[in-house]
Amino acid sequence: MALSIPKGIIVLFVAYYSLSDRYPWAQGAYSIFWPTREATILQCDDTSILYRYEWDGGTRQSAGYALHTPSAAYTYAFAATHKPGDRIQVWVNPRNPSEAVITRWPDIEGESFLTDIAVIVVIGGVGVMLILGGAFVVARYFWQLRKFQAY
Image 1: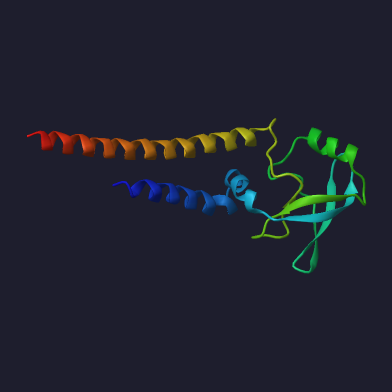
Image 2: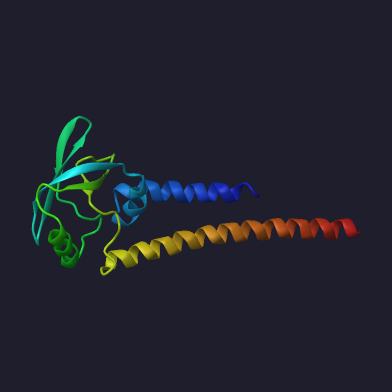
């Protein structure tokens, strides 16, 4: 029965990983594996950001700032400190190289951040329940074994 705990955690991880292409809340976790590239800013104003980067020998462009739609304050703050021609680091989705972002972190003012936190709590809670459930089964087994040996 002790082997079911790691299998359960692996199943949760695989399920979460497989959802990353379909659901933005899962993509946030998957993005920790995205490689970085150096990019050049082509356009940068209060409302939009456009940059160019190299991927597999080709040039690509993206306007992505964050995985989740950021508030205007983030875009405005970025535009205030950067100008066209500046070099920046971006994260590129290896499954979809046309998708790149300047930051992988969610907008902490928006509802997407709350969704990410809720998913982490739920998956973490399930993991804790699996571990505690496995510990309970093992403890119960040894308790019954001790009780049986007493007779």
